[in-house]
Length: 604
Ligand SMILES: Nc1nc2c(ncn2[C@@H]2O[C@H](COP(=O)(O)OP(=O)(O)OP(=O)(O)O)[C@@H](O)[C@H]2O)c(=O)[nH]1
Ligand SMILES: [Mg+2]
Image (cartoon, rainbow, N blue to C red):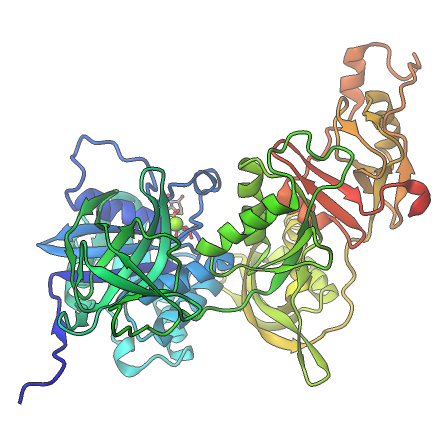
């Protein structure tokens, strides 16, 4: 008997996502796959980590957005999704997993599995995706390949992997050199063993081309030339250019439209296509308002796919119109309408961000997965010409009955043994509970804690100072637990300018003993602006614009330069960590300032 709906296997395709902890080498591995698939000619220079194409990604050397590319190997089209490894961008990974049939789990041969390895693997196993393990950076002098392999097995078992998921192939790579090996004594000099493993182990997609059209819009991209692109996976049916289709919107309504542009991914380019079959990963353009999570389907008998589920945000920040005396000086977009429209636009592409109206009409509660995610959003906005104020990040609590629950993170700290005491002390203050301590015998220890998310704010900079830059911190959302009680925050106060004017070297010289100064001579300030950190707990109002030419203080202008301690100029993330409840940060295209919420000294 012929089954009613025939599920056809599309053998010409493999869809795979590359997942890992941050910096373990995903994007570098994709470079190698692109280079070796023959898409680029030998002489064509390819920039390093070519998929990290946006400006902030290149500057910071991290992947922020998941991106799709395609290569061909032995006649098979392999669609590859490169994902970010930083935990704040976990939403990108969750989404990427909805369009693939398998994952390449990359693990650093020295660092081994870290919190985000656990997270991404957990998501992949839950989605029943087939894994291939890649142990990367086997060239590292401190590689501990066998140990790391065992740790990965332990992780799979810990995550309750099914029997067949445990049977994953292991490939050893030096992504930077484009080399993959099936065993450590394999003489391979290219990535062929990895490509072979993908063809052999990642299942070809299945789906019936004659069934009702169902296409999941899983990601968005933007092109100056084409406008908004929807990146989709065809689940069933045929998607033909020019066909009348229906889009089931997130609110359940149906939008009738036509597909006018259809593309597949080939290296860094898009190739025109006329038809898409089940399993294909394609981009469509020219569809007004298309958004992540929608289903493209038959307009006459629509069959929507289940919505994409992703984890909830854990922290929030209030964004508001900038009301400082300097507002509007260098931003092009400064009104609450500008802010609202920009945040609404962000929601279209960034599914792990939520926005709610704030208490005041000109403020917005922006919620995300972590400080870095919110910092990246603010940084993008200021570069686009936006100007606004933002309040201290807050943790999103929940309630169960009358118990307040707060988010808890799994924190892994790697540090030299000698700093163990300092780490324990700092985490103690922040209500961290030690859960595990591993000594690899290399002089470094790995310590794991469960610690309230709010205890992590400012922790990184604190520990980097305390351990002279040697501690490595990684954290991952762990769950909710009852409110852990008060955690003392910054023990210092702010130095606050008591009047408007221009900072003088003379004033800085006189104030620098009181604490750390954040401004350079020549900077314009206003009353209520924070110009430094007081060494004592309380705030003090100071005159940072005093100009008294006392000859015994500076004999000459060059003398002045010598006597001034260089200021500490805070970047966005540092300012986010510095400000307290009664303070704001002011974000503009050219500056990041901090201020008291109430500017007038006599009203505070
Ligand atoms: N020694 C060594 N270094 C490598 C290797 N592969 C990648 N790297 C380096 O590791 C660093 C991180 O590489 P990326 O490819 O950006 O890592 P990623 O996993 O994409 O990072 P995120 O996307 O930010 O999570 C870069 O400095 C690479 O040059 C390798 O095989 N050996
Ligand atoms: Mg990357």
